[in-house]
Image (cartoon, rainbow, N blue to C red):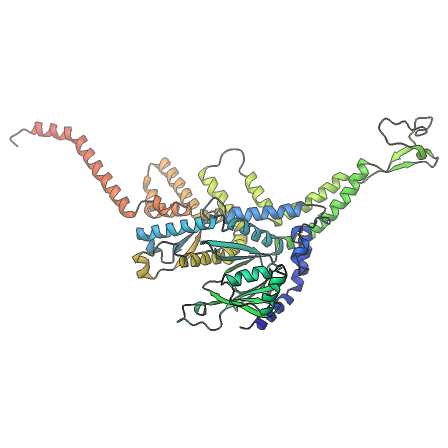
Length: 542
C-alpha cells in the first residue's frame, strides 16, 4: 500500500469526525481542561504550560470525572489484585493438574509483566478511563518493550482515527503524530525504519529539531500469505509514513490488533462513543453559570452595595474598621445608609446541589456512595456481603461489560501474543498440545466477582434454609440436595482461590478414604471391650 493512499485515507477519516472534535473541545473546556485546544491545533506542543482553567468556574464535573476513572480502575483493573484469568476453552482440561498449573503460571507472568514499571500499564489505563469518561472513547496501544516484556501507551483522540469492519469491530487505526528529524534518523540507524527520504537526511544534519508529521497505519492485510514467516504472513499490516514528504518509511505486521479501543456507549451508525460528560453537559453548563451568579451574589453579601439619601453623606463615608461617619443617621437614630438587599443564597446553593447530584449520578459516583451508606454501622454477615456485591454488579454490569469486550479482552489477547513470541510463558503441557487448546478470558475483578456472586449467594441461602429446616424438624434430608463436591470447587473459583492452593480430586478422595479407615479403626477400638465381654460370657467351649 503506497504512502499517498494511506495519507488520503487518514485525511478522509479525520474529516468525517469534525463534529466530534468540536464536541470534544467543548467538553474539554469544562471537564478536562488540560486536553482543551489540542483538538483544534496541529501543533500540540504550542499549548505546553498554558493556563486552561480560566473559563471553568466550578470543578465538580472535573472531580467527578477523576472519581469515575477511579471507579473504573477499582472495579475493572485494580492495581493490587489480579483481575482476570486465562482459562482453556475446553474446561475439562483443567482436570489435568499440569494444565491447571500452566494456566496459573501464565496468569502470574501476565500479572508480573503488566506490573513492571517499564510497562507503564496502570497510568496509561487510567488515562484511557479518563478519555472514556470525558469523550466516550479510549484508545490504548499495546506493543513489545525493546528491553523485553510489554509496553502500553494511551493515545489522545486528537492523534488517532479509526474504522470498523462489517461486524462493527474496530480493525483499522491511523495515528498521526510528530517526530523530530533526529528521532527519525535514530530509528532508521537502529533498523526500525527501512527507508527515509533524501530531504530528511539532508535536513537532519542542519536542523535536527525540525519536525515532520508521521502516520502509523494498522489495518487488516489485504493478501495474507500463510506460507510466509515474516510480516507478510501476519493478518494485520503496519505502515509508518512520512506525511510531510509522502514516503513510506517502514512496513511490518502484527499477529493481533495492537490497539484496544473502547467506547462507553454508541449511537446507531456512529463509530465513536458517547460519554458520561456528554450526558451531563447540560447540568455542567448550568452549574457553571450558577457558580458565576453565586460568586457575584456572595461578593454582594460580604461587601454589600450601600443605599443612601442624596444628601452628600457618602462623599466622606468610610468603611474602615472603627471609622465614625457623621450624618449616617438622622437625629431620631434612623439609619440613612442601608445595604442593598441581596438574593436568597440558600436557594442558590440548593439549585447548585441539584445539578451536582445529576453530575455525580451520570459519572457513577453516587452509586458507590449509596452502596457504602447502606452497609450501616454493624459489620455485614457473609451473606450480606454477597448480596451487596450482587447489587453492585447488577448496577454496573451494563457499563463495565462493554469495557471487558472492547478494551480488556483485546488487551489480554495482545499481551499473550507478545509474551508467547518472547518465550516468557511456560511450555505447553502434553494435554494442551494434544487437544490443540485455545484460551478464553475469565474476569476476576471486583465487578466480575460481584456479577458472579449470585451463584455463591444462592448456595449460602440454600444452606441457611436447610440448616433452619434441620434445626426445626431434626431431619437433615434437605442437605441431600446439595452436591458439595461440585459446589465447593465452584465457590473457590468464584472467590479466586489459586489452583495451587486447591487439592486435586484424587487428593480429596484419598483424604476421605484415610479418614474412613481411621473412623473404622476407632469404632473397632471402642467396640473391643464389649466384644471381649461377649466372648467371655459365651465361654471357650462355644
